[in-house]
Image (cartoon, rainbow, N blue to C red; front, side, top):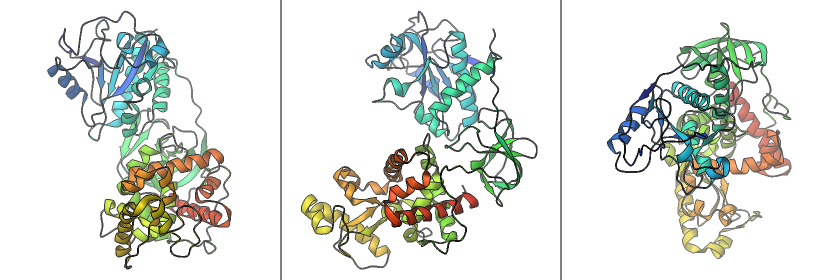
Amino acid sequence: MSFNNKYIIHSKMIPKPSKRRSGLMISKVRFLVAHDTGNKNSTAAQNVNYYINSHEEKSASAHLFVDDKEIIECVPALTASPEKAWHVLYNVPKDNELYGVNANDAAIGVEYCFGDNIDADKAYAKFVWLMAKLCFEFALDPEKDIVGHFFLDPARKSDPVSGLANSRRTYERFLKDIVLEYNECIGNEPSIIWETTESSGTVTTNVKLNMRKEPRTMADIIKVVPPKTQLTINGIVTNGEKVNNNPIWYVDSSGNYFWSGGVTTNEPLNTIPNLVKSVQPISKNTTSLDLPINYNQCIKCSNWMNTHFGEKFNAALIDSPFRKEILYAIVCQETAIYWQKWIEDHTPDEILARCVFDANGDVNGTRKAFPKNTAAFVEKYGQVVANNLIEEANTTRKWRGFDPKNWVYAGYGIFQYDIQFIVSDELFFTQKGWHSIDECIKRVMKELETKWKAHPDNLFETIKAYNGRGAAADNYAKNVFQFLSWIENNGLTV
């Protein structure tokens, strides 16, 4: 049985004996460890050269480095008899639990390079192929004998999850792609039946878009089309590879496939699958809805969110049942009514910091959750903490044209994280966590995922439960779905 050698593996060895390369042999390769460099925008050549130039500085190394242009081996694995490299700490126990041996003594370590100056598609293809090639050469099972560094050392490491996320991939997808690549390269590629529905209409590309042979990111690229290109749709694939949890791909008039998330529909397509189970579509008639902003404001705000924070949302939503459009729709319901007027005059960071709304029970005395009012807050957390929050609220009030008040406000951040959570999440409020979009996303995702578990496959009920219960929560969810409909039909600009 042969293996399709798609790529050349270059050899540029670290000097031995040295701290980075002892020259000790691996008696038997038992498994592979997937890493990423953690050094965004560094290339394979740059990393190898660094290891060579610092070979006596530290006992840390890997066998191979991969980027979009080349694969370089700096500790022997494939180009010569395999030697030990120092890529996993000896004192972590997980490698012994899984494989009965330390990773440095019996595993090949592969480092993935990523960043804005690295073609993610090409680097990822090489990374997947190399892992499959190593499995073939050392008679390993590609479904069982590969592990991520983060899994062996979770307290310290997040690779290759973080590097793959930067390249818009998931670790789970990576493992599946290695198996597919392995089978393809030994001539045993399994057939995949793509579920395609005939359709018609046109779309316009939002970004530079890859047209592929199949609806998956490992498929050959037929051509690349620039932004603002109009494409004719002949079909919709409903079970393509999930990108940002969206499995919908389109087929153009030439039979090429492209991911639906990279385009805007110019008009409703004749056939569009319903991606949300158990949800009744919202009527186009919005007169019964009490919407805080209108259509134009919704599109303006969602595009602002996507432009400034889109990549943050993409990374956070990997392997999540939610899409960023849902979160943008929630923002349109929660806070956009205030900050949509500030977009032209203030930076994104300034706007995030000013998202302090929803006054406590000081206004009408109807609040039931802690704190019912500012006095109750001061009683528990003291005047110093209260004054800091009051100062933040008054800065926002000034932006809104209001006089200052001695009130601790209830809602913090672009999603309006409620002050009641200070009991379990004090640092968010005392350290001004709402100034950070990452911290805001973490909180809303945690709450949404909890509600999703209670209402699996029912996005409407999840959004409703996120807000609360009863008629008000039902109206809240209807508003969010109206915003979602507008955002999805209009598409997002990049």
